[in-house]
Image 1 (cartoon, rainbow, N blue to C red):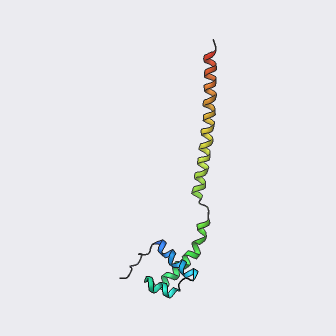
Image 2 (image 1 turned 45 degrees about the horizontal axis):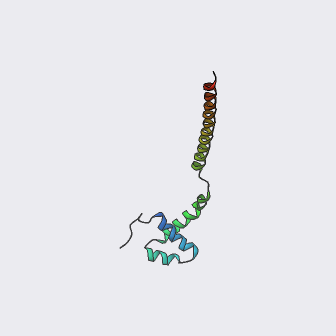
Image 3 (image 1 turned 45 degrees about the vertical axis):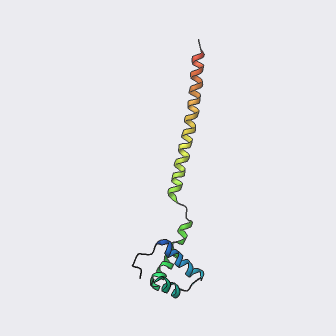
Length: 97
């Protein structure tokens, strides 16, 4: 049974290329064993090498989310202080004759 085009998951492609790059298996062995063309394996290898640095870049969405969380935490802190001050003032005004 042969695999059809697109039947390789990103994880399986990564594992094959990793075996190739570490020298665990030669390209010809991997191609025969997993029924993949050498052209595809070479393309996957190049994609990994070209895009591998992106794995170490910080996610800008995450930093924006963290900024928003920090802003909301500051707002909650400020509102908590205002509430405490209002309660003190209210209790002070209630105790006045």
